[in-house]
Image 1 (tube, rainbow, N blue to C red):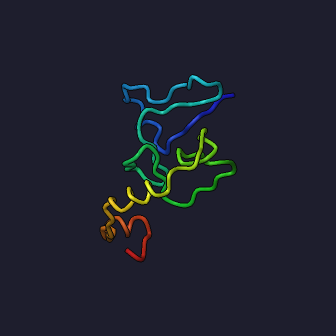
Image 2 (image 1 turned 90 degrees about the horizontal axis):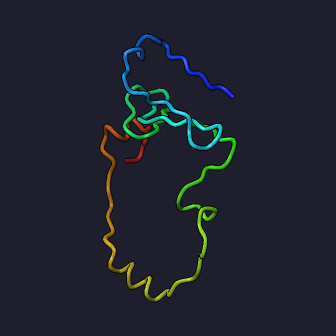
Length: 106
């Protein structure tokens, strides 16, 4: 299976010396070494999507129980003691972040 990409200005990539797109170690995978932006030309993370995203499958996250094993109950009293030692904070989002992310209640 082949995958192709076309930029709105294909010539802008001709001088890139690093090969950023590579085949993955797992069949039918593609690896990009860098940051990807969708609806943005200035991604500041591995993947930045400015707009809605639709997922037609599962989203796995390290906190997902499907990624864990040996899940067991813990000593509640010990955990409550630890919680009382936590630093709790309140905060407001910076206005520039809130406006970019569409957050009304900062």
